[in-house]
Image 1 (cartoon, rainbow, N blue to C red):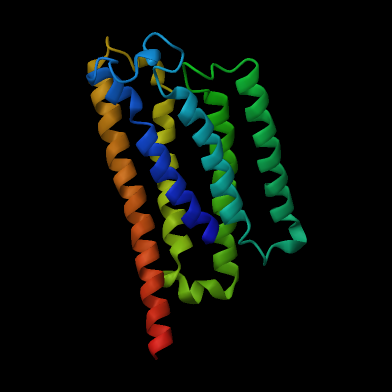
Image 2 (cartoon, rainbow, N blue to C red):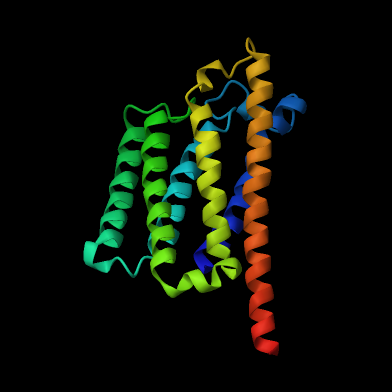
Length: 207
């Protein structure tokens, strides 16, 4: 859980930094003139890095909860898959991936598949263990549900990111709206999960 808390703090900092292209655009690059016409005038590079970190953190957090399925070596398999994914992402972005100017769909696809299996394994772990008795007070359950539904809703839109340009304002509007509501749902699930678990712990202490 500590890893997850640190991750959320990290995402808050990254999202704040990631606003720099908007600031530079409306400021007409007066504050940050070196960004104009540079490879970094968009924030693809930042979120390409963060996306890989997202998959690695989500995959690690949920796969680390697997204990009842030890005989299948599922945790080791998933951790190995995460390591291979990290290596592939590094090779991709340093060679054939368009690191500075676009999202790499192969990274998104592979990362999503691995996280999906980590989440499914976590939910099976919950069903096969005593964790199911305290399901409604488990922050990871709410977080896992939020991540799973977010991936299912947002990732399919990534297929059409080639239409994300000024000649397709309708798609930009639709994509922005879908992403906004998906993010609101995701972070709401995080908040609900932490609130419910903290409330449960406080009640247990005062009982």
